[in-house]
Length: 397
Ligand SMILES: [Zn+2]
Image (cartoon, rainbow, N blue to C red; front, side):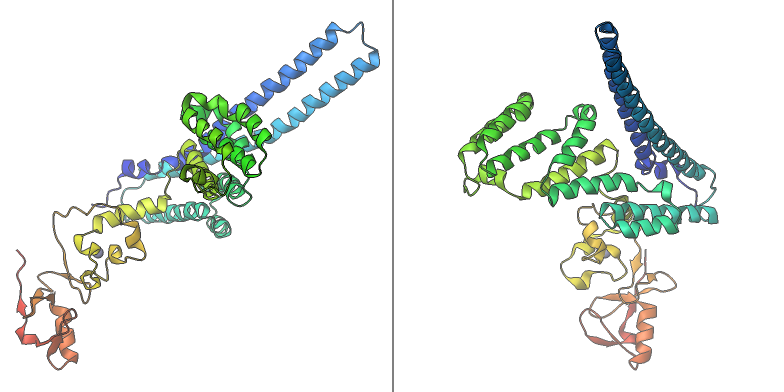
């Protein structure tokens, strides 16, 4: 019963391992491209100098060579910085793998070391939740107190938040477009059209500003390359030129709608999460939902609050119940009878007692009530009062 199901636990930990590895992969690839680009440029310029060495003045050659050396030195400095970042990511991946590996060493769920591990996991799940919801300072405090620097993806979420805010608040696509260009091949692989949506937004803003010639030029350069997959939308975008931002015509009014900025921010978040294998929902919600789905019964959904059980988290319609809204009902092989008054389990030691009006409560709750109500009990649902002796014992079969 108290054996740890390691495979099940690892199944939800995929992003924990994948995020730093994905960051490392991207850093390596981007650096490699930068090195190739810089060395090709330097080689080309050097070849040019060699070709013209007899025609150029020695000072001129000297100047070009100095510029090339400086360029290579800048590249070297940049690479040293990247090297540091890379070793940090490697260290982070290593520590995370070691942490998950501990699961194989634990023997039971009651072992104090395992419980300690779970508490730390709860902390990182909470950090993930807070970083996603923008509570960065609180997350940072938990990172510091729990010494969880390597277990939090603060830098990734900082990037997400910065680009999202730029879209939502500053109405600018600049950061998001730069991110798309840095991740173009990965986005192409998942057939993502985020860049098209961003380009379309920039085009719409030009029309909003009544800058028609610029908008046409922009569409030719940035929208037409998407004609293979987005032709109908490009055509609609071109028709937009004939409308003013105050139009009431539905499809064009929707294109001018400022709410598109918030939608773009959300699209961006979903795409970056997909690239880093992060689930769209916080891990905290997923874990809570697993538990809630095991507790959800038809009574939890009742609009009559008296049907709800005060000890059932799913019945808390304003809080945890909301998370359970779309979950299926639990499958119960064995039923547990729970007293509505005390929330205690009803069994042979504390049997269910039926009042004359048909409602059932536990013996312990009725005895306790009778002690204060002069041998009488009050049904909490109907408000009727009976003598304790009128309650009949029910037998669980
Ligand atoms: Zn319930």
